[in-house]
Image: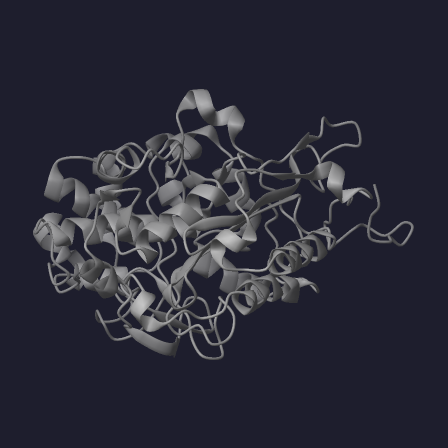
Length: 431
């Protein structure tokens, strides 16, 4: 093991892992096809992996998974690091369990893409509509002036109710209590008129949409997702939470990176709905990992998350099974805000109906990605599709830093993936 140099007697404020000296010993690959099958050169795939390893060497992430699909072929599906035992808070003698591409992780806000997909599926079926008022599905939601908030407002983060009160999730045993959560949603007071501003809804939006799905179908959103998407396409994971018997399979997340000071720490707490340390502790709780939190507790692998975005890239059909029409997917990533300042996140973002969109310059997916769509997960997790490059990608990490010196390596990896995949003719796009 090697680690970032420490100053004797000074606490490690950066909260880094001990990076193994032999990265091959903690790297694994699975189900990869040839680079040629995806229309790439072998060197291109290896450059992507070298970029991943350079990021891992920063010591910020105990584990990183990357899966890249190009033209439907899995050209890279690898993991590096440890699923358990090598976090900054772990003892020297803790059992160190290597991560593999099959290790599932909570992907936090990337869950919003899954939830948006379910809502758009029900819109396609005529069960819901973007302009449905939430109070039509949740009696009492009109309370405190919320009668004009629509499904479209919530999907596009323009409903004006971005956060739940901190006490809402203080007792995780109440997660299954539908009436309790519905009352909290109904009691919420909007801080602006619907549609007026963009303000990222970290958790509240997921519960609102979950309640709407339940009201419209008589089933909880996990059941709808399972019956309509996961089972027909034979997904092993990618649901909201996991079964109790699968809890031991889920990789551990760790608080990493330097602590934030005000006002940045206050901004982050407001965006997330709770302080960082409390959030990580809560999301490791078995009650959270077995519950239904539509905005935040999907558990999956990079392989499966990229497969979900491959489904979208292919226009709603995968392996001979169609679950959605191409025009529905085009609606889902229709622009609703063009690099507008997000009042929750504090930086400009570009949103569709439930998906973060790419852009020419300022983009999560690298430069010149106007057609890309996907979603970020807390903190360095990202899944997306880029029809222009025939890409479907997922990157999952188990460290939970905020700002750290090597954060450019995260964005550098996305840019590397985008740069290595040439654009394809528009006639070959599937959405």
